[in-house]
View 1: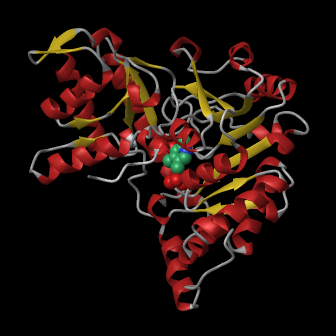
View 2: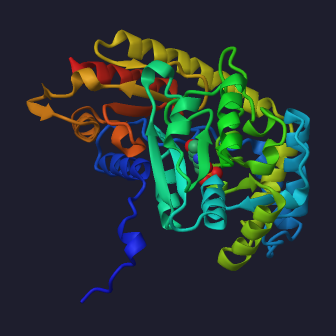
Length: 396
Ligand SMILES: *Cc1c(COP(=O)(O)O)cnc(C)c1O
């Protein structure tokens, strides 16, 4: 008899984005032409000077355990960046370097949540939030937002979602999957409710540098006085520097929470990869023109994808202010027969699109928003042109 899986793990959903990406890779391996718009990772190589710093770190013998919560140089560099860019004053001990921002989030939830606590998560949400919250025994409280309002949580919606058990508000801005971003004023209005209800706010700001047009990013911790005491910032190098495989992210928390996270990490994983930490140090401290160059490319793709979606009958998407996703409304094409098969939901739509046209997208259902599909434009222009053409064909 196979061993029983724990009750909590029985409720865990595997990552739908990674599942879609795996399916796309499978088809590719079988010789099919696949346009993969499923995965949220920059297609660029990690900039050369960062790779060189990793080589230098290895040669200098930085191949041993480091302090479990990260090397002091990297924590200091993170603190200096928040000081320089956002005027925020943190102590390096408030920073814990983790194995990616996803791990940082897991650490944070484990450190602050007890069974019965509630976490308000606006939908559409990034796939891992609700699952990571559930692992702690706490309850994700999903609040649906509307495309007409650029998928933004309003203060009234937040207030209505709060109960005496609400402990945390989770915000992701710029947003994966919607590409929406809260303005300083909008964040301020949400902060007022967070203060009134005495909430902690976990602000996932991993796309802070990938912002388009005249949109201006504001870090949640800066929008009202006193917020650093109730805010946990999440960030990392994966998206900004095309370093997804290096696995470095971090949390910045109030001192007592940071200590709990550091203690947890010392038991659970020890330090993140020493070489990756030195590479990330070079990323933060080195020339930033690589980020600018990637941003220029992303901006061209954003323009193209937005225009094409608007051209295809029955599809629409909200304005993309940041990150590298289009969250496409496919509702007009549900309940229809496409290629002889009746398609009723976003999962069927995406599976059929992959099967018939070789385009991999992720179903809105995975982000808590039925009737949508997420297209990542972290892929080359030729790929995007072919994919959007194939989607147009598919819905005709
Ligand atoms: C990619 C992503 C992460 C995780 O990033 P890693 O540092 O690679 O773990 C976290 N949050 C959001 C919103 C993301 O899109």
